[in-house]
Amino acid sequence: MFNDFKLTEGRPLYIQLKEYLKRMITNGHLLEHQKLPSTRELSSLLSISRNTVLTAYADLEQDGLIYAVKGKGNFVNQVETFKSLSIKLNWTEKINEQTFLAEKMDLMKHGVSWNKEMISFTSIAPDEKLFDVENFKKAFLNRMSIEGDIVLNYGYAKGYKPLIEYLLHYMENKGVDIRNKDILITNGFTEGLDLLLSTLNKKNGRLICENPTHHSALKLFRLHGFEIDGIDMEDDGVNVRELEKCLSKKEYDFAYFIPSYHNPTGIVTSSEKRKKIMDLFSAYQLPIVEDGFNEELRYSGSHQAPLAAFAGLGNNVIYISSFSKILFPGLRVGWILADKELIYYLESMKRARTVHTSTLDQAVLYQYLNEGYFEKYIKKAKAVYKKKYELAIHYCKQYIPCKRITGDGGLHLFIELDNNIDSQKLLETCYQKGVVFSPGNVFYTDSSGKHTLRLGFSRLNEREIIQGIKIIGDTLKNNFGG
Image (tube, one colour):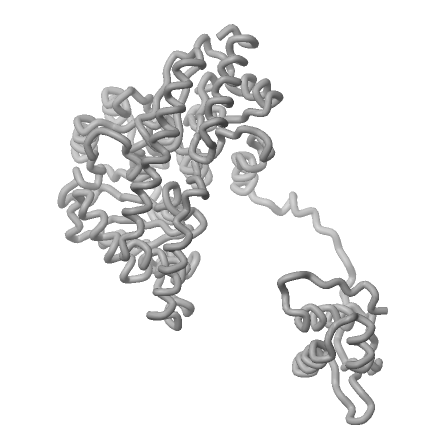
């Protein structure tokens, strides 16, 4: 009866045996009042120690699954195993339209699939080989020794206070006037934007943003039922003349901008344009949602203050960011910096939705940041990514015939192909040669951009970057007349 018991490495044997016997009992394979083998018999039968069996039997007895009779052994207790009639529901009929839309826009399901043998330019996540694991371990142990009992308990919806105070100072160092501002900690950027969209009054149901823009943001805007007007990008940021024209013709609830290392174009909006944008939205009394995407990955040139800094004492900029693209994406810790009154309401929405972001994750991140490890890590990361960036730019210009290449830093480049070549068809051909990238149309508000593509180079080594770009270039020349 027990010959199907299989051991798994790395898990205590007594727990495996306990779970195995529990399944046998609850599934009805061991019957009520049936005598179990003695501890000696079972240990011999399964080639495990008798102490393992003794511990498993003791736990099962404590759980009320078996009972012991002195001098006779262990027996199966009375366990309710009744099952109701089985039915099969058609869950597709019970799914709402918003969920169907989410599934339709799910690039993990409907985007290009690839395997580890291929050269993939699809990711703009950080290179895990750079992760500062040792210092993160130290930060974890240090924080646990200080307040392990606290960080393992429930936390506050607004966030872990030391991390909030650190981030307020961090934003102040970026030039943001933090008077009458506050921070809410979120599960990454995406939850922050979703919470905001769930909180704001949808008066006009229309927003304005750069075109193209962040695909995850586009998904959320559409899921929340917003109409989206996209404004084309110039080499120094959004086309302000077109922006002003749209604002004069239509009414909007807010704007969404990624001024630094814009996703997907990689463009950094100039200081002059940042001021014009702020002046324009001040005149129209409209909120701006600023995505602080990859702001730290500046490889050259002077620091660009975020739009939140241009706002001064004004409160119309809502800044949402995380360290996901440069530090540890697995932590899923982000933040919203905004007017105190708005944070007050966002806190209640956060509490209603997810209670709070993991206090342990917040506390360890705070310890890591506070001990100065982040500054050391970012210096190393920037040196590595700068080399990859310069390599990618050089070989793209050398091998890929195109109308335009943009990307002032960060972890990706954006390419506009000549002669309206369809990047989806290019991808299909490159796929056969072991190279994949992100077609640009998924980033556009109006599904245009079929002649564009995004190349993420962060997780590739130098050989893969060069080889992959050469394959894309050769494919363009040989198959598409590029």
